[in-house]
Length: 327
Image (cartoon, rainbow, N blue to C red; front, side, top):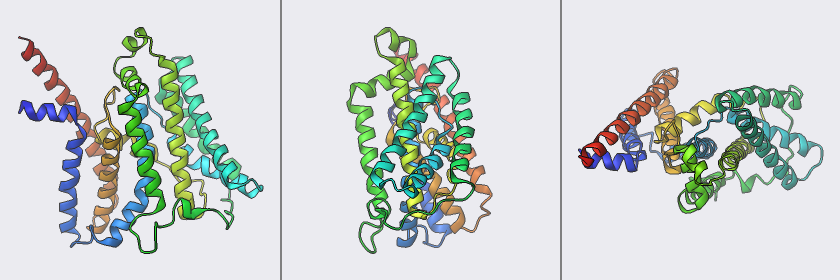
């Protein structure tokens, strides 16, 4: 039992992976084999990068001990601002760069206000959620602008080759996921992120630039949300002002389900991906099993609560084991 607890505490995302495997088997049987069919997996893999990139950004920020509830609005604002710039004749590469800068600036504002005025990031980013969503609607003029026909969608959302199971967006997601995982695990800055999230005061006393670390994480989170929104808009072919609504809560749920601690200091990119896959599998599996779609949010809520309770219980067991080991 103690061996199992140690493995879980070292790799909390493994519990999510085990649950994912169980759900795949259940939904595969309930859907008469449709879940793992080529066309269905193709559809899931087409949607996965958009939510997973947001979940990765939210996970990194949560490891740092903060939250961002504005990612769903940034998800819509960044591609909408790009669409407006493109219609004004600005080249795609320049519009993309300016869109990412806008996303980073929103993250900078979130981080600065949170740290400068000692406001909980939950409140700061809740305000930004409404502000960014309002800006999205205002700059759209109430109607989604048309995208130019000559956009390089092949680089972002087209299938890798005709009949392939993966889109180019999956390659972008895989590259960013690998870089983010390496960033967290193999760099001093990644260690600083965990230290700031787990032991804020101790990290500051050790000379770690706590404010800078947190602001960088806020900016990274917003940039990933904006880029993910661009992927969805290029896939859909229209920058709808309503995209991303509720995405911030699903991203937090994916992070928690994947083993990220609400108190900070613990979490992995792999866990965020597992959490996202669980949510997408539940969503898709319920539809294929002909279960009322209204049960989707119930299932995600229950799974999130279970993950939080399990993490808290495992934490208590870990401390108990350590106390017994010192006796």
